[in-house]
Length: 450
Ligand SMILES: *Cc1c(COP(=O)(O)O)cnc(C)c1O
Image (cartoon, rainbow, N blue to C red; front, side, top):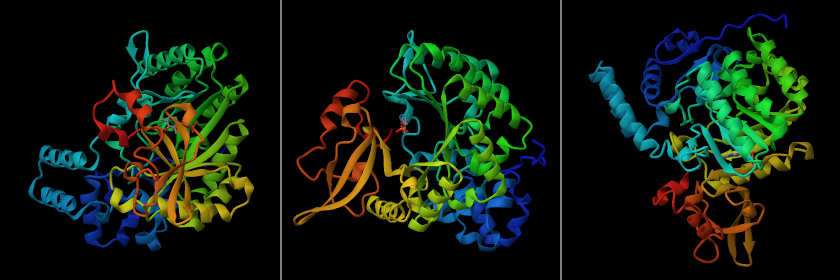
């Protein structure tokens, strides 16, 4: 493609004062950013800064809130602690220690998500692979453990390392291919991260190749790539040096007969408005790949029905398929971003009512918790009582899927573990879930996580 070259430039705590638009911030706001950025994820790039954020209205700007840590995202206690630590110590070790103490308070089980579902091949553990649902394995390639820009609500990022190592890529991918071949029920491999599209071409290809080689002898139908790159760095698919190589590889995957699906993370319609993202989507779609879209619903970013209906409509107009609306996990700066489940459903339903059927491929709001993906179907009434109607979109046991079940109405609950069954002592799946996991963990706290 003959396109202007766009050089990727990342800004972090080390160099963020080079962002010229920050001149609009007050000195106090810059200080707040520095303090919050020492706790929360902070990495943003020139595309996000120059093309996505409306700097005339940055305080209310959804993309600013999505990428720039703010004082309000921390509790007063944590903010004050980091603020005074930075004032009193230039010593990076002390700052790191305090940061670690705050992390531990924000997310008590950073690793628990993976521990419950790690599979084995020939007695060897497959680190970076999670097999929770029969048809689909999640794969976290070591070389894809970072992103083009960080979302302030993300809490995977303290684990980001981003090792781009060809040998590691081959080993990991061959283990995965062996596992997929052994488990003929697996139809989908989902590359996730971080962001797999952070990888350079050679490394990415190393990950894909072994899977293409075994494709004919296993149950595989779909390769999915979970990515925020269309929103944060669309040039990956247009003007970057290796863009054409990637496009050719995607074409090759599709030609092999595999369904290639980009699970694109878009949080706001703004991210779909630039020429760059339109071109990137067009180029990806021309390879024969599908693009399906998903995002969590977040306070201060997208907590209005008009935002979601506009976003789904734009996505469909660009030939993307709306897929999931998620409830954000109960970690990180949750008090800033969270919404009650009932309010999330109200936003979902009003947005859904305002788009035509072609946009209604979206499902939500959905929580990924230990038993599965639970969708809030809505609030209903049984004579005198309000109840919440739920169902599994995905279940630890596939037989749980698509059976409505009921919780007591709770307009304040923000996550599954706060809901109580409307009838009886337990939700219908609880005994079975407990026996599935009795051997794995004695700690019921873990049940809030994947
Ligand atoms: C969401 C998810 C998947 C994919 O589920 P689909 O409903 O097929 O999109 C796979 N594994 C885990 C752990 C998930 O959370």
